[in-house]
Structure formats: C-alpha cells, structure tokens
Image (cartoon, rainbow, N blue to C red; front, side, top):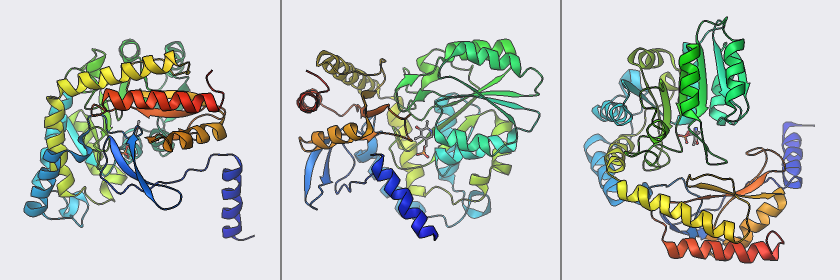
Length: 398
Ligand SMILES: *Cc1c(COP(=O)(O)O)cnc(C)c1O
C-alpha cells in the first residue's frame, strides 16, 4: 500500500459517510447575490446565505478604494516576516486601531486568526499552568492548546458549573487561562461571559475570548461579545479575524495587555515565521473598523433580518438552535439528507451549505444560515419559502 492508496481509501470513506466537502467556484465578488458554478459547468445567480459577511463589507466600495490606494502607495507584498523588513506604518496603524476599537492596551496582527490562536498559548504558558477550554471551541484553539505544555482541562459547552469544577481542580497551578469562543460558530450560541468573568475573578484566573463571529457587529459599537454582554474591561485577551465581518479578506489578531502582546512578537511562531499581511489588506481593514464603528444602522438591520428568518422558519416547522445571533443553524440530523436539502435549495436559487462531521458532531448535520445586513426581506422570505418546499419534499416538515 502506498500513501496514494491510503489517500484513496480515506476519500472513499469520506464519500461513503456523506461528509464530502465540495467547492463551488464563484465568479462574482462576495455579496448577498453571487454567481455560482453548477455541476454542468454553467453558472447562475443565487442568494448567498453562507458567508461570514455580516456587515456586507466584502465588496464595499470604500474598502476597495482604500485597498487600491494602498496598492499604489505601499506596493503589493512585503516579501518578509514582520521582524525582518515586513512592518510598514500600515501594520502599526492597524494594530493601534484594532486595540483602540476593542478597548485593549495593545494588539498584534497575525496572518490569520487560525495563526493567532495557534501561536498564543505556547510562548506564554508552561507545564505549571492550566488552560480551561470550552468543549465547542474552534479547531484553531484546540490546535494551539496542543502545542503548549500547560495542563488541559475541558468543560461542556457553556456549562458554568463544570467550569467552576475545573477552576477548583486546578488551584495548584500557577496561571490559569479560561479560553472560549465569544460565539460558537456552528450553533450561533453566545458564551456566558458574565458568569465566566465572575468565576475568573473569584478564582483568580484570566480569560481569553476568540471573538471571530462577533467583532464588528455584536455590541453597540460592534466591539464584540464583551461589549454585547456588558463585561468590557473584564476579558483579558481577545483574538479575532479581519476575515469575517471586517471586510473578509484575511488577517487575525490578538489584543490584550502590552506585555503579553510583546511576548507574542518575540516568540509566537506563526508571527515570527510567516509572511506579513499584505499592505492593501491592512489599509482596507483599518477602513473596515472605521465603518464598523459607525454601522449602527447595519447592526439593526442585521438583527431584524435574523429575527425575521428565525420567526419564519419556526413557523414553517423547522428546528433551529435557539438564540439571536445571525448564525442560524437549521438542524437536519443525517449528513446525507442535509447535503440533499442544501442541493435542493441551490437549485431554487438559495446558496446554503450543509455541515456534517467532523465540523459538527456525528448525527447533528445541519444547514447553517448566516444573515447579513445587506440581505433584503424579499431575499429572506424567498429563502424561507424555498426551505419549506424542499423540507416538504424531503419529509422534514409537513
Ligand atoms: C473563522 C474562525 C477562526 C479562524 O479565523 P481566520 O482568520 O479565518 O483564520 C478562528 N476562530 C473562530 C472562532 C472562527 O470562527
């Protein structure tokens, strides 16, 4: 058996399990409507409900202009990591602006949030420390934690009693860091930060929140879950991405106390050994923060859109995960069926994606709808109508 034979057998297993993840090339810019490719190679316009484009900034004119301007003034690429010759004024501006936006002392930009989460733990925590992590945390946190020598403890999703048990069980440790997603990306569930903050304060632990699915649109200024839940200043470290609401290109960050950020500049491996984020992306991300800060109207629209969709779908008889976040999972169960429902919707002009194992637990396949501020009520109603038709055909609803 060669490695290629092994690969083929892995691929057969994936297909058999119905968890194959295909890619559908889009030939337009990312927006509420996209031109997507069909199986026969032709393409059609579909309403897009699966982007992390919460504020609709992915093809925003002002961002594009800011990026174009920076292409002319600062060039295309850096051809260097940050500490050699890959730091421009734009990188420093973006870091300053991000820290200010989030109400944090300092900020360090990584090539992605995957890298930020991959790089944060290992330089800061030793075998004398403990990480206490929510069981639904993002894969990048799980991988980052694996790279460090600290004790690892896990609590069930948002289970505050279990978190407290773990805090009691780790009192012998030097530093304890509670790590949670601000919003759990497969369910749209928001972390119970008020309780986490109280527990951390009682047990003298620190808190890190990965706010990828919140920054820019949750909270009155879009500063994310701490602002949304009224615990600003009580979360010590925030990680996040420029690759979702803030323009959707790429780049991630860690924001927090100056000394922690400086250690990451000195030691975090994805920062030291990976190329600097492109100048045009930095310039556009700065513009995205400026827009997000003032985007009260877009945030209200986003909330109204999510509410309309949730109500309509519940009325039609679908099972959702409760909440008020623009991530709205429609639970299907069977992976194969979820794939077929998504396919059926696509042919009715609604672009959604089915998520199955290993992205979600086995038997909990779902279609994750993501609302954007740029969706219209007509598009949302069309989505509900299409779901209802496909749902009836497949026996999901009556
Ligand atoms: C998307 C996401 C990431 C990864 O961010 P990138 O910048 O795309 O690497 C990390 N954590 C969470 C919770 C996410 O949703």
